[in-house]
Length: 316
Ligand code: SF4
Ligand code: SF4
Image (cartoon, rainbow, N blue to C red; front, side, top):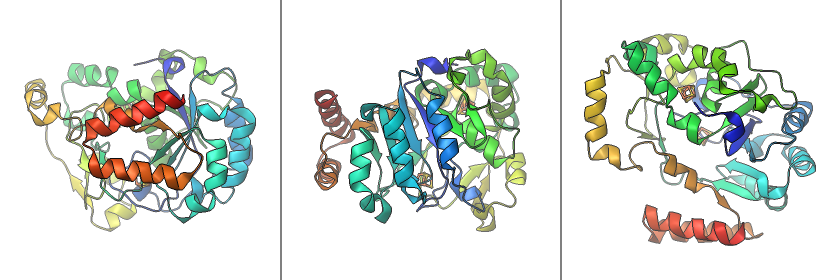
């Protein structure tokens, strides 16, 4: 596990309302019956708790622009965090268009994913404790979890978490919450988050090399006990939970890792996903969107990333 102080971003989750209902969403949007909207007091407290934090600060949902006080939230980001460190995760939509100018004034980093083409998500609802009976193997995988090492810690209305997915489990499964939102919480050592790790990593499948699936898949992979916990979920009501009844062994996992498919980061999870973050180089949302769409249409994954990273470097 990696210390939070060394992470490149901490996310603040402001809502789980979304335009979409993707399967395998890291915020488990399709499993909640009602959306929440963080209040301004919470957002301000969360931003203030990051005083001294050198990394980036994300604003994420769901779709953050659906928050009824999104423009006030942007104002708070501008008050506490320099623009170049403010990141927005968005799937676009009418509210994104409405807030365009505010967004470009506030966020120097934008992850814009319109979901016109499917993105790939790694299943997270297959509890490792159910499908990996070899505890040593399970602990090894969890200790080397790629998501915790390459992505984000999170602040949600339930508190501060060492991992964004652990934060989702806490909200979804009615957990006891994270650390209080107070200045410097992120300076704690990773061992100080062991209670969260013990509680949530065993429910999660992110470190298991299960193939990522398109977010428009009409089913979500879950383990049996997690499916039971999700019996009231809208995705379950829609008949979209697909139970995995399988035991992963060390030998089986080694074979997966040797396969050609595993080596393709577009088809499997990979930290290369991180490169989809880019500095928005222009203060004109339409031009920027056009560049991104043109690149998507003409360039292969690697070339597109190379060009985007070049733009990012030139504008950093
Ligand atoms: S658009 Fe993003 S946040 Fe919304 S449901 Fe899909 S993956 Fe989740
Ligand atoms: S909750 Fe899941 S994604 Fe987060 S560190 Fe644990 S195993 Fe990894």
